[in-house]
Length: 485
Image (cartoon, rainbow, N blue to C red; front, side, top):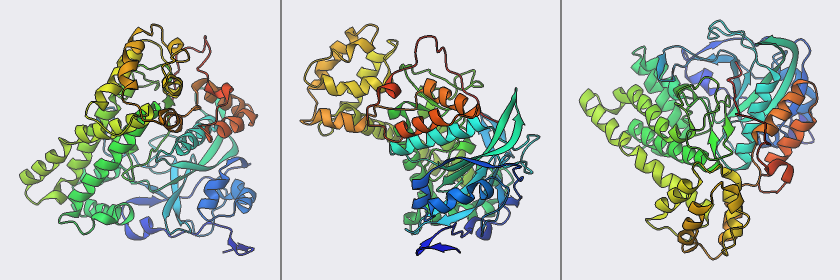
């Protein structure tokens, strides 16, 4: 491995997935990019992985585009299944992604490094395995926005233009994204083997997941039940955090739920602006299955599918295993509610914790519903209303009467330093939909300036930059996003 002034320059791969879980992947080589060019590099993430970002900037076009492989890489396409819009697909898998390997950072933490858009695999299901510049940069900026806000998320290490077009509705410039994740173990990974009756592979996968993500449960009386319990806890917390920032994933399928507790696969996602519980951004979610308000419900539904896959590990007696699973599933709503109330206490600047805090938060949402009140600005401007002056807040509402009726209840619960707490819990800047589209359109046309400015803004979400704080202008219309495939 090359060194520069005592600093390790390259990737330090240790590929435990390939070593420990044969039968869960297929070895595939990425398609070489004809004329790769680095578009974006997350230098801080590279440093965190123990990689010299200057060195990586020099070689990224080659080794993160499929044109060449970094030393120690062993590219594989991982197998998984999934429930998509309620229908089960027994075989999905990495159709346009390849796990290059796992990097162990200087703190000893293990990270997947994956190429996305690197060409066909045996799981491509007729697709070309490629990706366009726009969707890859969307994943980059959304991941950075979530990470800056402190939410568990995969992140993009780099985006490289391939120099080759991809054909969608029109011809678009192609790109490859390098994604870094705690792992790519999904609910659908377990479903793939459970659907085939391969209990032993489910067991090996569960044991690997415990060792990698939940070592604290290894000594439990039943580690696999304890694993399920721990996954519920992480996922309940994650979805509560999504709801707190107004994030809508768009495709909460079982193959998009990671057991690590990270947000994964930024496709038709966006941040809600005007509060509306039924908000949907995905072009294919015609029934609103993955709407904003339904995300906590889908949390429970997806976890029920995980429980089904794990049943043989819960107990040899199927009836007893079902009873165990149901006991945990019945508790998900309450666990999510507790996590959500904790998030809302922070956003509202409340003192301590009282039983009625959830109702207080619900009261604000009721006042916002149907009023066009911008989610991010409403919570941010609560800081100015702590002393009773709602002049900055009321104009966000078409009819502020419900807000004004709610304010005294809220003010009675405030912490002494409520204004500071509110500003610390509520970002000024999110990845506003019109700004995202502006940046992606410019980048697709060859101008990276707006994208770089947007990334800089969302990376410091508590710094007030007026150009990135305002909702979409009139005429922007209903926002529709696409999967990017």
